[in-house]
Length: 78
Image 1: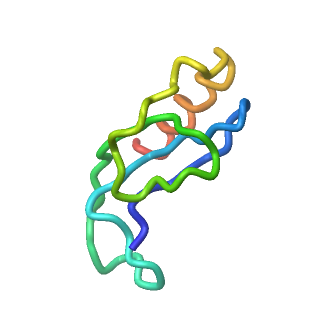
Image 2: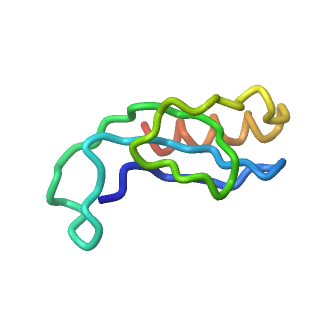
């Protein structure tokens, strides 16, 4: 079960999009529609699954990276 997507961003961080109920690997259409649970920034290499209490480091994104991330999220979630 995959409950998040992550994207590398500068500073050794990941932009993480957590989804519910998640995607069954190998059977992406089994669980139906997905809901965005959270969007946060976390250290690269950190386990993101089922842990939503980590400190959000979104303020560490530079303005260009933040704008690009918002653009990408808007495109994906439209």
